[in-house]
Length: 388
Image 1 (spheres, helix red, strand yellow):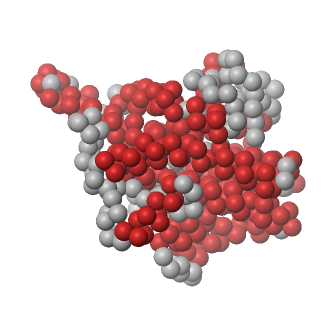
Image 2: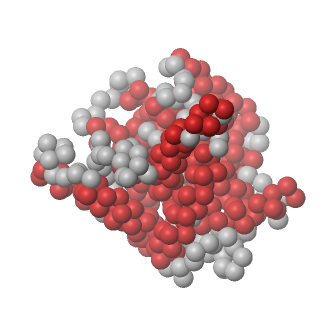
Image 3: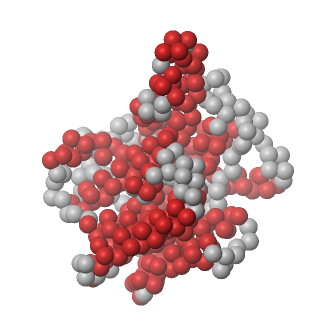
């Protein structure tokens, strides 16, 4: 399961705790892009972006449900989630069709047409073409997978949103059994105590087991459940849970190409522990600490365009890698600077430059989806604060 951030961008500069959450979201988003470019197995261990982002989304969801009717909240979340996906689908699916993808791609034309509906409402993973050719030497042949593979997250996020009214009621009645239930589900799937027919249902339950506790921890934080714990409990418990998760991951051969994203049970333990500790810290900054003030506009921009960065950065990576391959045709670089050509570090600023172009070209859809006036570069200089 690829690493991806939450489509629920906040805005820096709100309340003190909101500022802290915006910082976590921005760090998580940067780390996701870095991970997808570098592929280092230790990055999800250093900062489990997915668990953090699900927790922040769960916190916002609980806050909204406490203020407005559940139907209005769910409708508002879907309105913010779906239009950016539809824009990606309009571009990406059109390109796949032009590249030769069609009803015979899955061997069942009827199912192909039905599965296309997941690009409209991602109750399951939207389909995408595999093995399609590149484009004019500028985009490599992996571009369709770069669009389609990360969309598992939208499916997981959608189900969390739809289930949130029920989850919140259950959380209020039995807080800790509810929070721990997804971890128990993940263990049941991992050790074969529960078998599920069909990969679509299995994937959905696996993701809920891996990250459901994080979503619920975010809700529990908003509901004040964590504040009722003695102050020593979280610092004492979280490292133990994290150690068990890391021990299990190492036993499953944690390495590049096989990391926490491929180990749902280890992911559930490690993310649970990290999120629990980060929410426990949760400083209420009246203003940015001195070392962070210079990053205020960047944090605001990343929060305001989290969906766009998430949806398009993988394609930017594929384009960057395709363009970088052409540098091997320059003889001087091949003989005198092979390290420059093989290192992914020089590609990182190019990836972010292309992502910035995507923000300019496609980010306005996030504003329309949220009912705001479209902006090209919402870094907080002239816009007003908006929260769901």
